[in-house]
Image 1: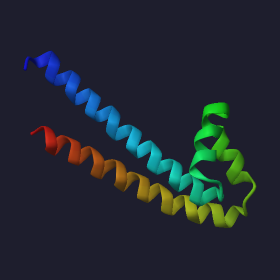
Image 2 (image 1 turned 180 degrees about the vertical axis):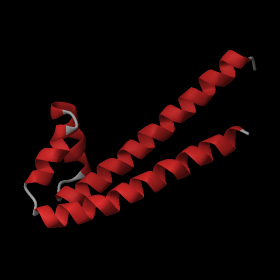
Image 3 (image 1 turned 30 degrees about the horizontal axis):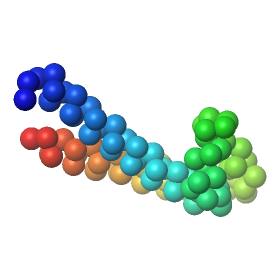
Image 4 (image 1 turned 60 degrees about the vertical axis):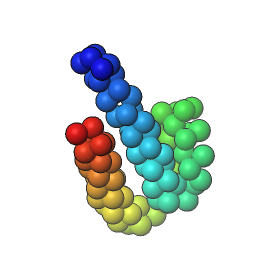
Length: 91
């Protein structure tokens, strides 16, 4: 396998991991907003990232802020773990 093929394979794997992370974030957004993950995905396709903000706006601000703080920490951990796993698989 030449260098170009190796880079392409690594990029494809990274894209797969990012899609998996995106699906996980949709589930977290659904938990925060009370919507379903499919609703989150369809809303983002129709309205972009502001779809989640619109759904959050309908909830109590104190509940949302606490949930978002927790979700942010979870998202950071998930991304870090997935990227570390992807890098270890390549070594």
